Amino acid sequence: MIGLDELDCLDYLIWLRTGDRVAKRLNLDQASVSRKARRAVAAFGLDVNKSAGEWDVVGDPTLLNLERQVHQDCRWKRDLPLRIDAQYYSGPLLLDQPPQGWLCGAFDFLDVAVPLNLLRHGVIDVWIGGFPDVPDDDDVDFAVVHLDRLPTHLVVSPGHPLTRLGEAVTLEDVRQFPCLALPDGASPQCQAALEGLGLWNSPTAVRRYSYEAWEGRTADEVTVGYASAFSIKLFPVQQVILPIEIPLTVGDSVVVPRRFADHPRFLALVAHLRQRLVEMAPAYPELEILPA
Image 1: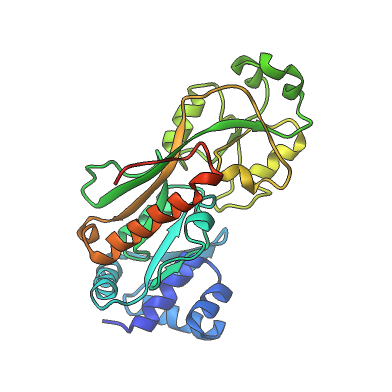
Image 2: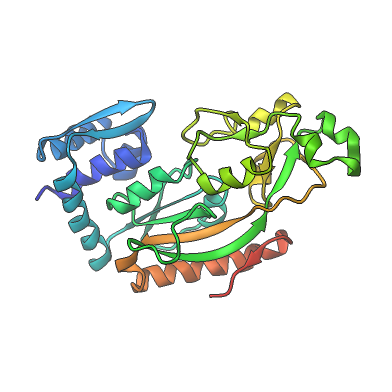
């Protein structure tokens, strides 16, 4: 086995991506973070490499992942701090004041694969994913608790040509313009729904959320974006919601390794999140809170 602090440095580096964030979280200097992280991978004959802002383990991580499971079990059983992350648009709302004993990530995921891999291997303990791009309810590895639902809207900047059509605008009109898209497979359920409508046709290579690389692209007054009542507040300039209903409902779903689904700490977290939604509801008329 390796020390908790060494594996923490490695996993926090993979999770939070920068030595500065990890150093502040663990109250270490960046040199210590790097040294301990490399000591952790070296113990398993591995290495770490950073590419495009992401840290990856080089080599066969099978034994490392088994060790992570041991450390994760220890966190849950010994009431140690647990790690939670969420989507970029709902994380800051639902976890603005996380329950005691929970440590939050950077809320910058733009795909499904990265957070699910972190959860699968015990790097993080809980993920609040964006429905419909979450595991199935009968998934073998994960338990899923659905919290809420919101409609998706097509939005454009105030100067967009489509705004001149008013209530007469149609989906065919929208198809004449570029529409935001993530890399192929990043959000497969949403991608399929929007591609089926002839949208999702202007991809970006961005892997982590930044306003400039995602919603900010609508500032060109040509590109069409998507927003829910939660995410539309991220635009610094008020967007125009096009009067077109599209068949895409989104929401927040809590994902946890199935073996922890009945743990008192997880049940308390879900109760906290539901209460937070109840408090938020008056400000979000479109928000549908799902029954427990």
